[in-house]
Length: 225
Image: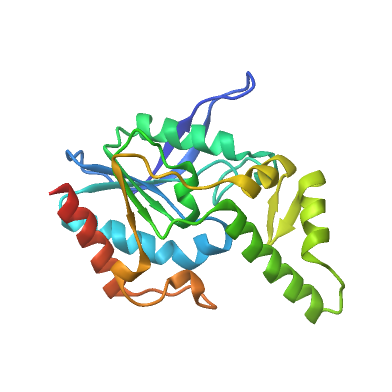
C-alpha cells in the first residue's frame, strides 16, 4: 500500500523518490489521484483514502503520489513551482501506467490533460490564495498584528509567503495568482452538489463522510464501467 515513485531529475540534478500511497493490484483501470493542497490536503486526506478504498473494492486501482515538497518529501516546498508540479504529475502518470485521473480541488491545476477522468470541486489558484491569506490576516488580527491582504500579496509576489505553515515560493505564488483549472475534452467536472452535503474542506477540522466517499467512488466506478 505504501510505495515510492521515481521523479525525473531537474536542472541537471539527480532523480529522486517520493512516497506513493496505492491500491495497486495490476488491474486494467488505474486512477491517478491529484489531491487537494495545503490546509485542504489535511482536511481531505481521510476522505481521499476512503474513496480509494471504495475504488479498490470496485476492482479499480488507485495511485496517490506525493509531489516534491509535500508530505514526506525531502525537498523544500519553497523551491517548487506550479509548472514543475504539473511535470511531476505527468511523470507520475506515465511511470505508474495510469489510465484515468481524479483531481480533487486544487489538484485540478496539475491534472494531466491526456488522461480521461474527473475534476471534483475544482479550485482555482486565485481562490486558493485568497482563502489562505484571509486565514492569515484573521490569525494576525487575533494576535494583535496588523497585516493586510494587499500587503501580503505584494510580499508573496516578491519573496514568497508563509501561509498556514506552508512556505510558498515567489514563483509558485505568482503562478497561482493566474492559475485556472482546465477540463480537457475527455474529463468531467463533478460538483459538490452531485456528492451531497457540504464540502469537507469547509469544516474547521479534518473530518470524514462515508456517504460522500461512497457517492464519489460510485460516480467514478460507474463511468469506468
